[in-house]
Image (cartoon, rainbow over all chains, first blue to last red; front, side, top):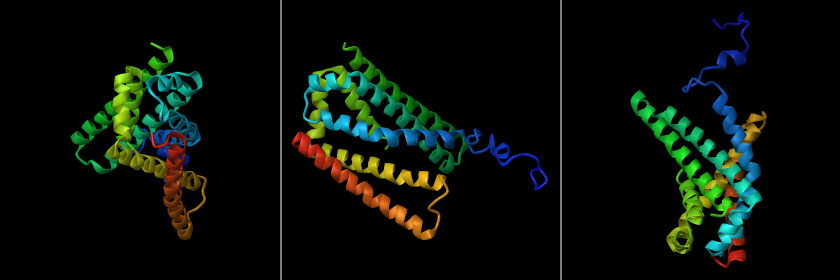
Length: 130
Length: 98
């Protein structure tokens, strides 16, 4: 089918494969979010260090400022996405019962989306100052 | 990594909720147990970061020889610990231990 005489390219042969049947898209997104977080880690650590020792009012003011809110939003999107893919790969590799696997993948999605949206909501609330 | 993000989410939600909730987070992060967990999370995060950087090297087609893989792995371990200690030194320097 895909012997030496095949005209299909290597990319075409891997598209749609993998245990999630989505081929290489997870691989690419995992690298994309990894590079994003590698760039974001220093600003994020600086933000966290800025908050040490401050009371609620001071912390809320810093977290609600525009550049800091944007840095944290980018980091939250990248990190929750990265962790969703990473955990799903572990589940798909090690959970062999199809039903349990389905439940685990679903729970993983719920968890990651919940963490992401709760954090995003908190930052937006701090930014709007209410 | 996975459950450490819960700490981050808890902290952000508390900051959005108000002074009482935020004081609870600060009481936790100020306690010995809280500090130990945070220190562990800092190390886990930074080790994952530098360890993950090995994949950038491999994706670019370098570092596949046995001695290179060894060096990258040891480098990641040492860099992760060094960075964690560095972050906590800075944390104590700016915050006086919260």
